[in-house]
Image (tube, rainbow, N blue to C red; front, side, top):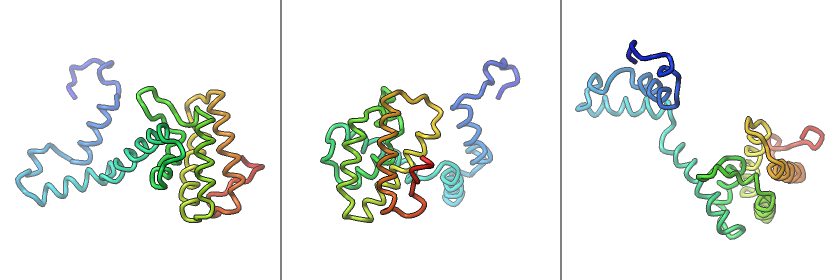
Length: 179
């Protein structure tokens, strides 16, 4: 950064943080990395992927967003894979209006009914509950204000996880007196 810039321009923005992290991951400028050398390029790409997560990290987030949007359109008609991603995205702001599935107790109820229908398929049920548990923890520790509908959706989610606890692995169990 140029020393002549004012203090207000030096405020850390997401873009400046990304720039700093990329510089740290690359440890130099592209011309210093011998971009004509495939091995140097592979090392540089590995450093960036190690810092920011590879394609899988981005693909997972995209799958969550797509799953939630499909759930809003299709409801119970989702296949298991999309349903699993929806469970992970209950508390995340998704669309251009930053809506959360958690803000709609009716949709939370439809989701919980779809997950409950998988109870006879233990592996799938546990995978969906793992996503619901992560969403519950994220919303419980959230730094965003919970609206009354979101609190209601969070309570439905908590009650579902408490009732499902006996069928879940120990790390996913929520005791009713602690929740």
